[in-house]
Length: 436
Image 1: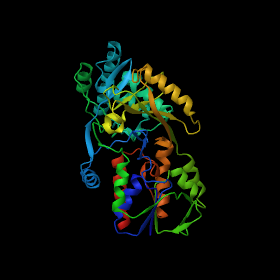
Image 2: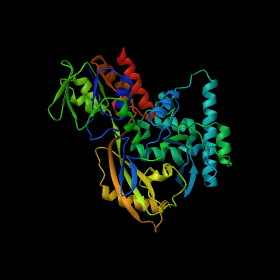
Image 3: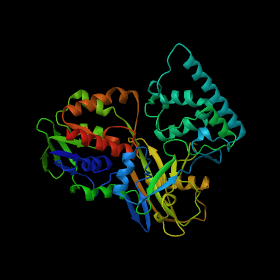
Image 4: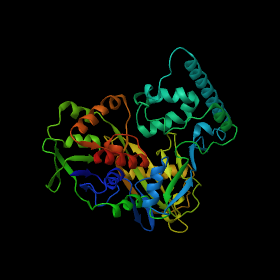
């Protein structure tokens, strides 16, 4: 029997693609979806912060059309960076034209210098390093130059990651951060917009009901999920798993989407070296403030990034621009994200006060707007940290688990920065491996 622990997208995709194989799926929450869930409050539909479908794989498109026929609406991204009191279209590095002239000059000169340096490396005797050979900070300066690093890339990412970027690795950046050509950067500085660049240029979102429709759509095609069953312990030799109601189940293979450090803590008699590796994996947490307001005049954006330290949040997004049904008529809904270190939790009342001050200072919310509903969602595991420790030790952890018939998958199970599409495809890949 295949035991699947966790009914988020990774677990649900695995179960779906296992088909008629013998499996059981357990979920600690009262419903499926993990962080890909939605809920209603006072006429508003909120997600557990913004979750959008960016598709690059034909199989995923076919799968979603089967699961949610005629339900997902395509959007062309409208996203910006708020800094220097202006909105710069995303990506910042290719749309500099609205910024102050001295900032544009500094960014252009820096990018040109970085381009010349990369050319010398390419034409010299030495081979250029891959992105994984740089620290994140070095990669930013090498690829974009000192100006773009100074005015956006470094302050934004320091705000998000809450760390010295020189201590982060960069093997995750190639698919997630657009790298424009010199022609595109110069054109963007002159007002020739390059808005639709990068993997997030287009996305899908349900016409109504929120992103939680996606995990729900798997349920008619698979066996019953046993909810409110939290995994507490695993015996690798006996191949038995225990849950918080003191029940246990024998398995032949275990597919886990539990955050990797927690999974390692649950394994009885785990080798000390593996236990230490698990303790060395780091992540950041996010407090998501979901807001419904008496306004339908929000900026015409899907989301906005905020690099400047005076603004307490790093990103805000607008549910009612993904789907008009996310808010009642003449109202609007948005989410605001504040990251924090797990060892330094935030007080939600302080966060709300600072967020509202920041939204008004940036002109996102007007003084006349009234808050109809607010709700705080705490996300203990938000983004995994890519550092040299992870780079060195994660393969050893995954190998140890696989040798003991455990497939650890999903964003937190595999400890990777993954899109929703990546997660769905990983579930498919694991199911195919289990089919043998």
